[in-house]
Structure formats: C-alpha cells, structure tokens
Length: 332
Image 1 (tube, rainbow, N blue to C red):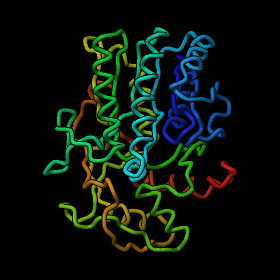
Image 2 (image 1 turned 45 degrees about the vertical axis):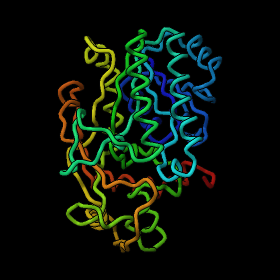
Image 3 (image 1 turned 90 degrees about the horizontal axis):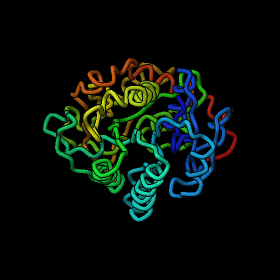
Image 4 (image 1 turned 180 degrees about the vertical axis):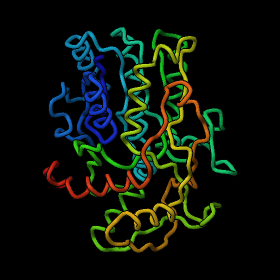
C-alpha cells in the first residue's frame, strides 16, 4: 500500500514512515521542513512544501495515483508557542487542514487518518477519559485539534472523504533502530526536558505542582512512539473495516496508565546511569493537569494495544539523545 504522510519528516510522521516501510508499505512524504528534517526523508519519495499548496498536492497524486490513504501529521504542536502565537497556529493547523481536505477530495482520496490529540479533553475528576468524554481544549494548539475534528466530521458527512481521528496522548521514545527521534535538541515536553537537564547536569524543573493529582504534578499517558506508529498503520490497513458504516470516528491511543511527572522522573532515575535532581516551578501557559485513557476502542477496532513500557521509552529516548547529533548535523 502507498501512503501519503503529511508532516512525514517530523518526529511522529517519520516514525510512522519507518513503521510503514518495515511492514512492506510505501510512504510518500509531504513536509515543508519548518520543523521536519530532510534527513528523515532519506530513501522515501519526498515533496518539500505545504499542505495548503494545491498545485503541489495535485502533483503528488498525479505522480502517485496509487496512494491509498493519507496520514495527516503536519501541524505546529508546542502548547506555549500556541499561546504566544495563536494566529500562526490557527493558520497552520486549521486553515492548512481545511485546504488539505479540499485538495484530497479534488484528487479522489477518500481515506484520511488525522493525528489529533488527547489535549482536547476536559480534565476529569479521576483523570481518565474515553472517546465520549467532554471536550474542553485549554490552549490554542488544543483548540486547533478540536476544530479540525469538527471540520472533518462536517466534511465527511457531505463528501466522499472519511476520517479516523487518532487522539493520542504523550509520545516518548524513538524508532528502536534509531532512524528517527525527536529532531529538536531543546524539546519542550517533560521527558525531553528531563534528558536535557540530565545531559547538562542541571536540575529538571517540574512545572506545576499544585494539580489535584496524587503528588501535585501533572499526570500524562506516556506512549512509546513506535507503538503510536503501529497504531497509525493499523488505522490505515483496517480503515474500511472500521468505518464500514460511519463517515468519521475518534480513537484514543494510550497505554491506559496515568503517570505523574514526579513518577516519570523517578522512573528515569531508575533507568539512567546517574539521577537527575528535580526542582519545582509554576505551570507554563496552556498547561493542564492531564488525562489518560480508559478506553479499549483501539483494541476492539484496530486490534492494537501499547506494547512498550515507560522504561523502554526512556531508554530509547536516552539512546537517541546520544546519537541525535550524528544523524542530524545542524544546531536546530
């Protein structure tokens, strides 16, 4: 199967591409390289450009008429940045997604897997959510994901386009073969910052310690990026079966286990060869207490469940952090 992956030169999109290759599929990459890396496109059909460029999307389909499905990973995805630049985020994520839908319909594409986010959920009293839980996105980034799900629901009801929205939680780890990993040397998510502090032999700052969790720190559902990639591939290969009598559907992708930031640091210190110290600070703009999934929809419909542990994700993240600069050669 040939699969178009928008944002396929980024952390998640490139890992999905590697997973597709390993399964015998052919990924075609469309990425504007604002955050993606050209190195992650090696050995793959690659088109540099934006999803809003209709002529470019038309050329991709003209040159690859056998594309069977699209996985839409292209998005800006840093919560504090979205608070500082909401116009840029709405333009890139919402306008870009709407334009992509128009281009796909024009080219006769009917299968779209959308990389959504669990950040759209309202925080529940027990911090668990299902696909039917109330939504309450707290940042412009999260709003863009919720908006695009609404857009895709309306579009799929009126056109041949059908959409699976994968609401995933907090990716960690790297491609186990170290072909891809976090491209940013200075990541903004918790584990990336823990590793950054560990490498610099500096304390790690826990941002937000007054949340109503067991230890006051935020709670997340940390999922290995390779498990996440496998779920995207399952969504593509089972697409018609899952949406046999539907036009769109959301599916949560998580481990089903909530881990606080303090617990993440403790697990890191069990895996790493030396511990990292933790200090406390207030929450960042757009931060929320967090949620984790209690849904088994992914297991029922995709035949998928997370296989790798948090320790696996930490170990692979550490290995990638040591190899990153040998794979990626600039200062990004």
